[in-house]
Image (cartoon, rainbow, N blue to C red; front, side, top):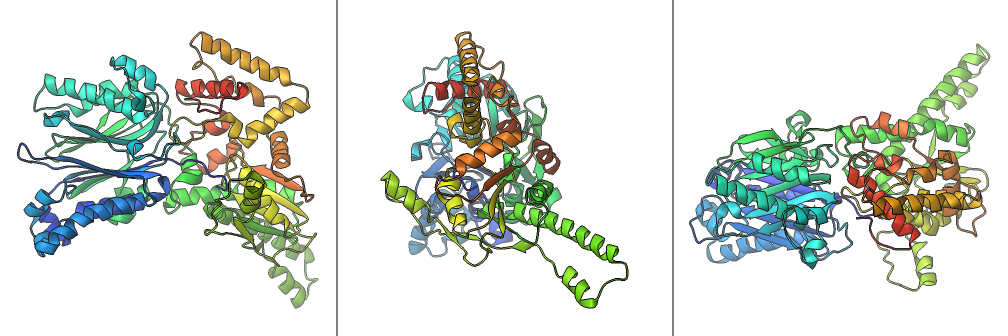
Length: 615
């Protein structure tokens, strides 16, 4: 998306089911697991750029020797930083023992992270804190192996304070700021109880069944236990994605199906989705089971996964993004009065490219129908030149903008900074007929509208088109997220600001006060979670009215070229992405009570001028 927002985190889990000597013999390297973990993390790099971490557990280690290791990085290239340090240990050993990589036992004893259980994490800092201390995995250490725990996940919780209260912990300053710290304490609490109740025979599914129902949020979480057991579990609505693959050699889980398929070169049907409420449990002896941890509820898998976050190399996601673009065809044809001859189509940014291909196909299908109708209407009254001219008509597509990846805005002075931001994109001159062509550009979603106003609209206006139409393959983002994406402040959303402006223009400021008063009353009685009051803000307006106001808000005052904004409809989104129905960003229909609490709190913050998260 042209607006930068904090993305989702990514999870990578590998359990080696054979001795290290097996991988040396079959794959030629004792580092097979670490190599695969590196690839699995890199193939999900789109999900995390603020930091990364790796934890490992070694099996059958003599007492007194470390078996749980962790390394984290918040450097500019955290994955590379982590694995360069891990491989640095190998290179140091090879200086004195050049053939040590041919000795699995020695390698396991000397290389810290050469364990049978591996957990990798890619982090986007949803709390705006990019310190290494906030990078997953988190760990708990203990002299009793089964009381050691490493935990990492893709999630946000909205009830962290309540969790600490439930287990009687007074959190410190760091713990208060971290969802994972709260989750860690709860799971560890039941882990210790479970081991004390049945030493040496830990019931992993049982302890998760006690801990996980306490979490309010969307989550995919992986864990390693010091006794050799491990797990991955998913929330009851399937909000956050999770996939797994099991073979004789490995058990693998990740946030993206395509990453597993690519790294392990397996077919689509070999990679399974970890269904909502399920837990993938791997025991210390390598036995694998999928258990029901939570009773599954209505599937509300996040639609933003399909629109933007997950890699488009997954064949299902690719087809869905094509459909998102295709479904916009009719709205755009109406907006350009079906004048394809004088319309140019393009996309900004590159993440919108697949939806652009779908839109292109939709335009091309319409043009084919026009050609057939025209030719049939001629009967026998046509010449070869007339027929050739009709058949040669094409949809006009151009690469009208190129992002300058070298641009960095170091200047902090507002007036100068705005001047710099305008040049993040380079325009392609000579592609548009001045004052004749309409320019249609598709974006995957419009969140804040800041980049559109400060850079893209100004840049496109240099081409002097007759009209600019900005198309969003996502519907209007009206409500905050609290399940793993950092979109928690209502005032940031261009659709919200548009609705507020319409309220003011039509003399309905009293409605804002009514919503505010209702939120305050719910807060006073501890009932913020019971309803989404902010939905009332949008009821007086049609989606087209809000889109019209958005167009005004993103048009710089000095631009006199007409600008129109077209959004995907909720109905066409569901047609394109039928299995990912989680649409609370657009509809305010949250899958858990915590969502209502967050949106109402976000509105209170907005009205009170507090620039803080709603959870």
